Amino acid sequence: MWLIIKSWVSSNALRLIGWGVAGLTVLTVLLGARQAGRNAERVDQLKQILEVKDAQLRATLDAPRTRGELVDRLRRGKF
Image 1 (cartoon, rainbow, N blue to C red):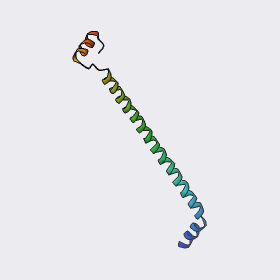
Image 2: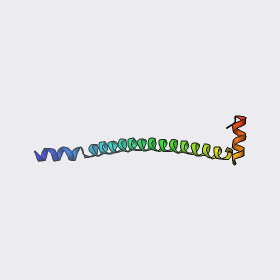
Image 3: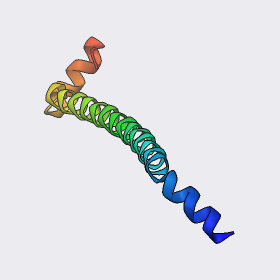
Image 4: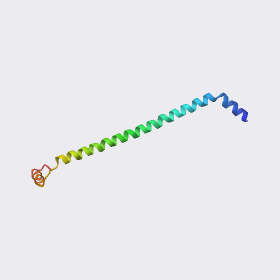
């Protein structure tokens, strides 16, 4: 029995190696695509975070600096 298996493996060794390499290649591509998707999500999240921070900074620049300015804005309805 062992001789039959050994002779079959030795005659089909290149074919087995080829299938193994093909399987590893497909696995590598799939894992790379998965990682690329994660990186894209991270980039989108970072963009949203930066937009929020920029909006907060613009809001602080436009904020009234004194109590008098706050009262004037409230009277004009521009708060």
